[in-house]
Amino acid sequence: MKVSELLIEAYDRLPDLVEGAVEGLSAEKLATAPEPGANTVGWLVWHLTRVQDHHMSELLGQDQIYVTGDWAESFGRKPDANDTGYGHDAGDVTAVRPRDGQALVAYYRAVHDRTIAYLRGVSETDLDRVVDEGWDPPVTLAVRLVSILDDDTQHVGQAAYVRGLLL
Image (cartoon, rainbow, N blue to C red; front, side, top):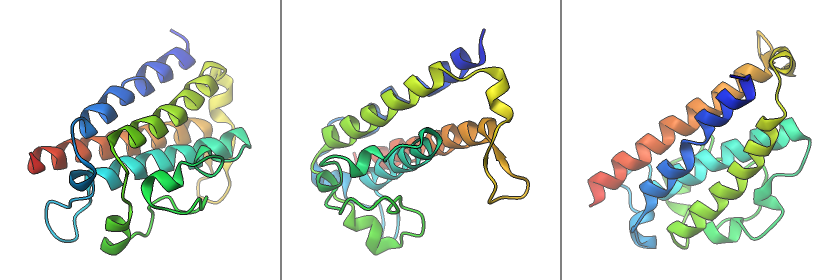
């Protein structure tokens, strides 16, 4: 199996998990924290998608999907490339208000499709390339791709858990 095929296999598991986390939830439920200060399903899915979009856009040298269309408006946000959820407090979390679950799924699918297209061209030798000098040790492509996948997997699991608390 090629490394690109392995990465695609792993990333291709996420869309169904995202859809399952938001399926049937109203806009109100998507923006409901299970208790004050906790993350909402909507914020968790928005955040995991924002992080993937942000990191992949850096790898591609392209604008984020979030800022190139009407995506931000679908979540009650402004199209700010730095608004990924890092550093959000409880007020910021509740300010992310998806119009519906389909808006989250559509944004995730757009980001996912671009990620898969990128992964198709990744070779084993590409994985050692340093993509971020801002860390010690510097971050390689392999580490960045695993980090994105790990972050997404954790957050979609959290979203599914919160969903269960709300139903």
